[in-house]
Length: 107
Image (cartoon, rainbow, N blue to C red; front, side, top):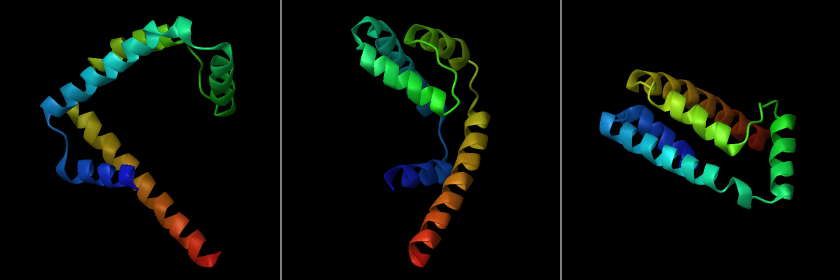
């Protein structure tokens, strides 16, 4: 529920350019750290990740490729796009939470 609250907070108050810059910086730093740790991830963890990604229909790339892709697109993210996606994501969450509430009531 905390995530839902945060999404609604972001939808209501928005994100400043400075906040977006800080979020992207933190995301890039975490991604860089993960890419540097690629040799320290056990094969079992890698296999779990690949199997889960495949089951969800996701494209699988390694941590270095993922970081390179993130670096490529991070600079292209615009504040307006964040607002559009946040409203879309919030609507999805609202619908799922309402469906979950209905399911609980009728169960």
